[in-house]
Image 1: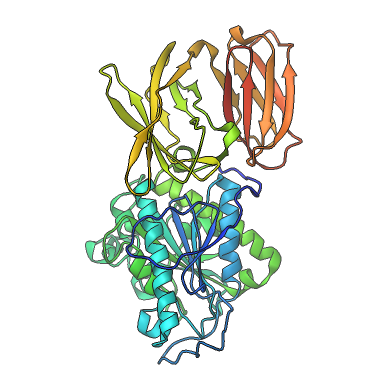
Image 2: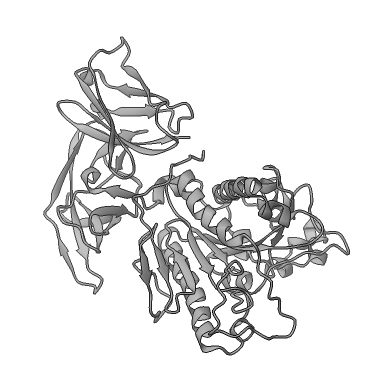
Length: 498
């Protein structure tokens, strides 16, 4: 999957909402792009809709006098400088690259007050407020994990840290010691060492059937992906293990608790220890943020699901663009959006009526007050020919009650197919291919992600072949919605400008 770069979306306002309690580790109705806090206000959760969870346990700076400094044997009280803005930057960078957000959990307290990468005794040192923050921190992660599994079945947890070791390289922790990484590939691929790994589940289930050692240090490993971007990493293809005597962090409490080692669960984990040179320099830090975001996307593409962004991201669509719309692509119909007259904070199942008059769930959307968030943007098995299909929306309230909308008729016609390429476009030049029956006036409307109309033009002169070149080079990098309409129909297409 090629990555796209998307301009920051002011439509996703950072609404500050305090969450006063969690009763269980269940998926909560958090809105991607919004910020939430635990009951103490010391733990921040940036809600997401990607199968990626980012944790920054040691980047906070708050040192309230009401909370005494921790005292524990062998504990560190030094912050991992710049890891908080790096995690925040990755939240924005993922949106810029994909149009969607990772889940991000940040400890706002200084490490001298709260260490969110330790068990509760060492993390809070008996302080009741910090203990409450500890629960809030891990319950946000647990809730994000539930949501990732509900939406994607699989996911990746990354814990962001900083180290001050002499060797300036990124240290990737998979819960394997330096001595274990120095073992042969054949030994690392045995069950005993796979079961010690924070990516245990991935070893047994990945797209390319990569072995454990390959996932750790082959050309397709995360370390190598970072190394190729100019950030030396261990383990990787070029640096497969730390040598004897070299300091190396192999992962801590969070990696163990939230990865797949101990529970063989569906969320794998990597602890990412960033060296000082790449954290402390502002220019390098920005490159690092973009590179890590790209590498994580590549890692999921290689090993988890190479269509997860295109097919499953929750994109928030302005209400004026929200409608049922289908078009044919590769002889499959694609259902884009649904029409609702009034939207509230409810879930809606998209159901299709069969010839036997029964309805089958084919998608899920949810409202946030004035927009739809799609949860299942996917190919549908509609017949790729002239015809009508019938749908309804099943509105599900948070209390479990539901009601049905009126049946909606959706028509599509293969003879009026529209193809849009290249998409993503690096230059902003794209080609629009259409059937000869559409050689009347075409109105081209381009909306940004806030729903603002930024281009509106009419094309009435066509070349001999049924193809138009459209010049969108004036647009900034980002994601746009392009409406193509003539006197008989209209289609919405999603355009990425890299």
